[in-house]
Image: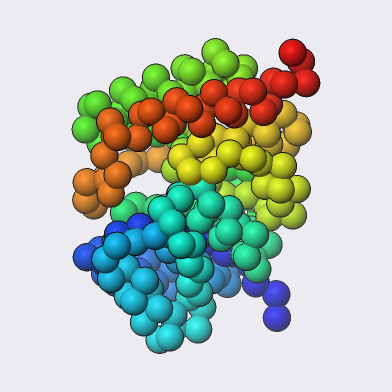
Length: 236
């Protein structure tokens, strides 16, 4: 039996939130007209996240757990995409689980209008309710992508949906991990002339981020420099 959709969610130190978030997601997906599986991509958690995820997978047939040994969001996301069985892949966050975005994105993919849908925090109509510093950081990061890599969109991080067949070759081209993997995926897809549409989302997180913003900056800057070199190298 074919599967319509794979929902990929990287998880890191989410013991306190994970069970309730998955239970709520299952309830809200109960009436969707497409079949789905949930891939929980644990990566290097230091709490009981993996045990909670495995208990959920043991209880529900359509939940699977992937495990990466170190904290690495990009590697976890990539592993989930590659392991997905669905025709469409939804990339979500455990503190968002935005079923409204999922339904709107699947409708666009079903209609054949696009290959890739971005849930943008920064496009017109979006509602970013995160702290102002995180919103400002997202704006600054997008400006950097535009200046360094001629990025034409509004956002690369967060919610995504795509045809797995169209994006899997792009995933295999990506060379950057951690926080910047998501940006490389979007930018390479645009450069491959896939059809991409940004749609507005509301971002209201259920808990503070598991990794502090300022501690991420040096690593993100370094990986962004590597990404710029990897993509623009043929032109130097």
